[in-house]
Image 1 (spheres, rainbow over the protein chains, first blue to last red):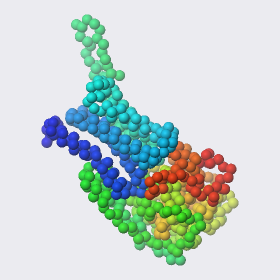
Image 2 (image 1 turned 45 degrees about the horizontal axis):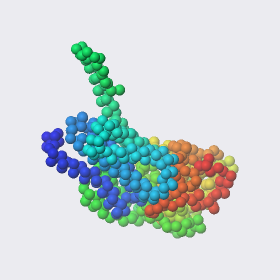
Image 3 (image 1 turned 135 degrees about the horizontal axis):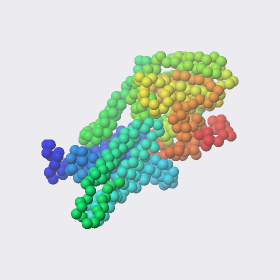
Image 4 (image 1 turned 30 degrees about the horizontal axis):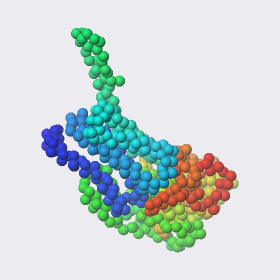
Length: 226
Length: 314
């Protein structure tokens, strides 16, 4: 069992993937059943909108937790789930956006454009979704090969901006009680903070590296991350 | 007049529905369990509505609207009563802890005969009327609620306001033992009206809805209802009414002066800084509908604001 958790075999990993996929679908299924049975409270459209937004944020944070978890616990296979988790974040984001576009605004394009341009919390949420789109579109092996690992990775770093914009979107929406968005903000801060800290450690390590060997004729340029 | 004491059956005592919702929410939040399980939760029937004490007999009012009334279940399960939690379902879950007897309302300040009223005396102060009003929340949703109450003017006349009284301040009940201790707003919640707004025949003190004693989550035992203003102006569970010379500070105005003005009249032309007020979703309806000036009560109240810049005095 422990061995499986550390280093699952290919078939085990396949099972894990299917299980996680189904788990990620659960909130959507639950909301769909709730909608059909009129069990989402007095204002089901608001409930759906809120739930969709929160699940988008949760999946973003889960996706961002993969790298730290992998490094802290040595569970390297978690990386194999990251693409799926990120795509679920995008899918819930699109559903959240569609809830607003269709159920809330009912395709009232004048009101929709006005809101996107004039209301900062909607601007920010919309920007997050727009930024997420190229990430979703390039979440496949073909895109990585075509773009090259470095460029692909640079593009996908914008997920940090997406998460920050997403939390800001939630924060701006609440009337007075910021407790819930604060929880998301703190988790995000921890996930980004640990990355910044590791980067700093790496910089120090490289700075402290022994001077280049004398036998090299030419000056050695050391590349140290900022 | 026969008024049953509601102490024997408090409507909010019987809310096992909340328990069921709690479990469902847990299921969603944890992201665990099976879809089949979720289906079972949703399939569970809602418990029958509690038999709350009837109020009556009730006089009809020419101010009542004939629009379709929002179902009792929605009116009593979708509430903003932040002392009992900020989710819409929280008040229905938590307000059962509120004890509404004994209860007194002190009417004080610039009055010739200031007085403290016992809630049971308050109920007999004036004939109870049914007032079916539109309720427009600042969050852009609305309801139609059949309130039971009497004009606030009837109470104010009892204490004989002095000529120097220009405003009325309402202070609501705050008990940190049963309500949130987090300083979401500056507790206790306070609201205010200009004296002429308070004396307007549309302004009522409500003691019930749907012909029954007020459920706790809706502001029992007595609350303000000012139908042409955003819902938060209609303070719940009132304990003090004070006549003042200066404009009183109000809870939401203190929390967000740019967003919530003293007047807060329903106005489709003046947006909340973060969202539009041009339209609203009537609870139970799928499509939004346009919001009306003064929530459709312009004929009765527009004259109160003649010559005022309603963009500045939002």
